[in-house]
Length: 255
Figure (cartoon, helix red, strand yellow):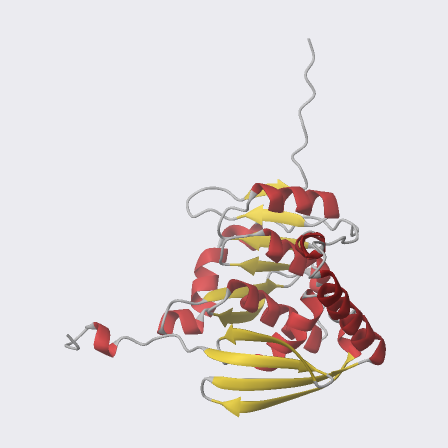
């Protein structure tokens, strides 16, 4: 063991615990890859519905080192009030048998239907897989990480964010888009991971118009994408892109 090419010399993905507190109130501890943490904090706050826009985030202070990190976030008073109300409601119902109802509301939240945007040109998808592989710096070095990327309206791959968690990778991308003031709906996002319902929620809250996945989506993800105006495309390894949302038009049948 540990010889040339052995496991003892293999590079491994980094991981740390990141504790997030909003206006001094502890909210969550997330296991993340310790890169682009400010992007993650912004994206997590937006895609989780904790703030309505990046303008509600007043300050982010990162601290700690190694495996234990902290993020102290100052948010607008209206956003903090809503956060406290949500936490108080969950705590108040946990002893009366209604906590399951609240959990369902969080798992299947009401989200607005967004205006449709055109599907991306086929040329922007043609060589996407090798371009993604080239952009994934951490994956080339250590593997075991997911990526979320942004392709702009010209087809240029503008952003790549990586993390051990697929949700975290998309949060980092959402945060980077917000911090760099890029128009999310002018291009599209790509995720290298399985496309679950939670990723659809995050994409909708972030205002993305199109989400491309390298793995097939779940049936519920497709249903939610169609109902809420999100373009959803699967990019298989060896076949043409599959557009799941909007729903394919049915051909008229004549006798």
